[in-house]
Length: 88
Image 1 (tube, rainbow, N blue to C red):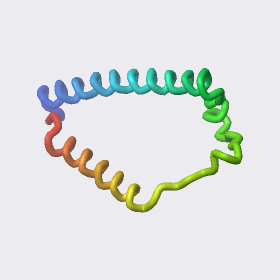
Image 2: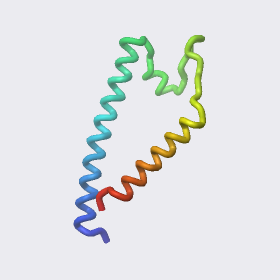
Image 3: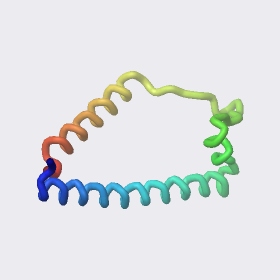
């Protein structure tokens, strides 16, 4: 059984996250429009099909393991902070 305070806190988080999701969807759509208008790339087709034609000058590059480890550490710290200091 969930207490009234916990239910209220989780409801608040739920509503906040739904607002964050709407903002992220809007940013995603703006990025697609920007790429279509200014870079002349059809990203919508690439997102649906999973395939994109690359030009010779836009070769695929990978970042090093150090950046991946830094991102993992930052993500882990963020999750820890939310779990430790978050509502409830």
